[in-house]
Image (cartoon, rainbow, N blue to C red; front, side, top):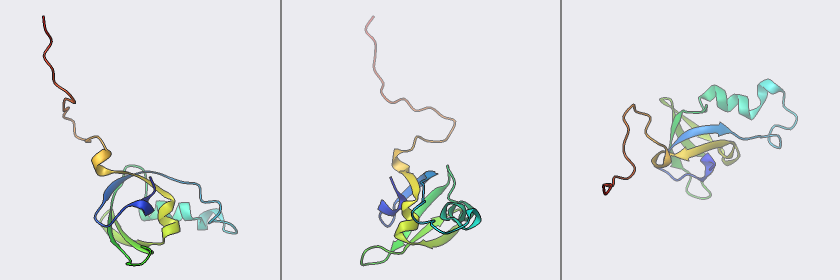
Length: 105
């Protein structure tokens, strides 16, 4: 899902960046939205949280990532692909059984 779809208070993990050819028209590679988002810390595996959204339309939105908070327009946030934190498997070294059952012998 896109970061732009999250609500205030939602936490997620960045899984990638989408193609932004339509937004980047006329810009050089170093000025592209993808490069800017990557420089801000929107890289795969980074944890982010939607801190605030404007009341009407939700544009812009404040997103906390890597200890910093950034304001992103909806089009910029739409380029960031995320997975909600509750949907992400724990990154710890412990294993948790999904289902326990007893086998009849």
